[in-house]
Image (cartoon, rainbow, N blue to C red):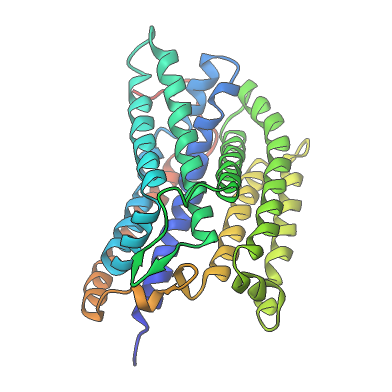
Length: 335
């Protein structure tokens, strides 16, 4: 029995990136929403809601980036060359945000500085992730297996659109997470914010969806020509179901958990749609997963460790969320 190792590894990396987006997305979203909290107590409650799990969420970013380096070295080299600036800014923002998370609990006099640092780091990280995604969607120029584009190719109106879309989408995730995890004033504040954020997020999803097929004719064929339309037709149907569930969950008397899961579903469905557009390329428009893959020996070696590692990560992640399930105790604090 033969295994298509590059295909298997592409699936593993896509899974790691998806889990990172849906887990760290609401985490970053809380930072993006920090200026909208009414007072210090509400900000403390928001931060405490992710205190037990925020750093574990970023494990998946390490797994996705490390996996890309190990098993698709050519893709890693091209992507890093093309997106060096947004990726470095994203990593610096994540570091700055992590420092702010720790330091704001250690001071009262300068807490406002770290509050703004937490907001700035979260927003910049989300913006850079969206810009990097947009740059991949619009395509990276490759000649002789090397990046041959310019230094600023990643910065276009389309990538700015996708960057802002991710910021707003993460804010929606953060708002629905707070709605699910809290009661009281902060709960009602975030519920009030979640509805307009949901509308704006859907506007951005529509705008990006309309513009994406025009970035490459292959995308257009994939979404609107037979037989590709048979694969893409379920995507808008699933999206409509998620939208219905989201607004039902956010309605007065709605189910808090439904609203959060529906907002996660928007990202999952959009991610699947991007995957359909990309396949079989790992770096559009020309570099396929088989062309970018390392030798089979390397793929087998890393796969053995990954098969052991991923269930362990999933296990401790699930356990952490299980232990800290339910509404947040307002008297609990991060120390």
